[in-house]
Image (cartoon, rainbow, N blue to C red; front, side, top):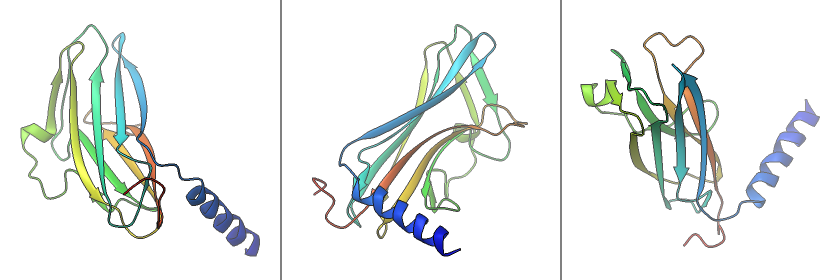
Length: 160
C-alpha cells in the first residue's frame, strides 16, 4: 500500500511540475453509415493558477456524405464536463432544461456543432475535461468522448 501512495504522489508531482502553459486539444471519432463523426475538445490552456478562467469548447463534426441525426429523451446529445477523479464537478448542460436544442441534433455533411463554457480553476490538482457525444438513444458501448487535462498549479508559467 505504501508503494502505491508513493507512486501516485510521484506521478501527481511529475504531472504538475511538467505543466506547460498553452492551449490544448484532443479528438476522437467513429465510423457510421460509410462516414464518420469527429468529436473534439479544446482548452485555452493546460496549465492555470487557482481561480484563473479557463475556456473550454467541444464540437462534433459530420465528416460523411450523409445527413446524421440523433434525438434523445433524457440527456443532451453533446455535453462538456470538467472535474477531478472520480467524477465531474461542472458540466455545460448543468441547470439547463432539456429542450430540443440540447436533445436533438441534425448535421448535414461537413457541418459541426460547438459548445463553449468558462471554468474557474479550482485548488491545485489535475482536472480532466471531456467532450461527451451521445450518438444514439440506446448507446451500448458508451458515448464518443475526447479528453484533455488541465493542471492547476500556483505560479503556473505564463498564465497571468
